[in-house]
Length: 308
Image (tube, rainbow, N blue to C red; front, top):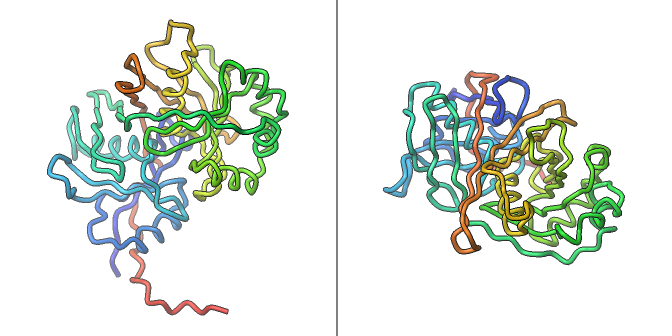
């Protein structure tokens, strides 16, 4: 019976059982897509990272990301978790590492104290013409809480490798009370071609946080994501594009998330550049190992499933 090492590593936190849990398979060499998908479903994390040798000569390693139901092109927290594990295990040293993903080769910076910073793909931000009442119905928030800030911060589609629908909300209380309808969210995100919805407010729990956020991606098998790296990076690009800080942007945008799931965590986002053509986005965080063991590799699919 073949087994592989598998870990659960909590990203964007320093405490186990907080932040966002990522599955990590440090050696996924030879696993088929079906085997990787089965392992991701068994581990049950919102995403599991599978590491192997790269095909691109400019990369140090290859990574693929699977939710419990499908492969996705990019995942911030699983990238942070994977490199935090590799660094803690002395597989890699502090410095710059190049990671081959489905969206290209991305530089990953690991500092001597274990902070991992992931540079994301060039961002795209596009306005989306959606009625507030329709979005409010999807995420279970009074449309007035969206319209209140919509003149300055319109609903938009933003991506740094994995697109999310950006939905600004006026107050923290409204966001915490959100009662989302997963079926309506899935239909909405299918229509606007995003992985999920990222709702946020400048009204925060911690005084030193910049925004508080919640994210839902039921179409990808993730009803609510505790702390979302790719969406946080996309939100940073969105805020940069909207000039949300009146010409005085912070050096680092601190995104707090996960409180309603009792898994609080923080994403540190940096955005640089003066226009759309040269905007650079990175997200950073730490991680804590919660589980380290072996998982059985399922036998290749033999198509014996009975169908009605």
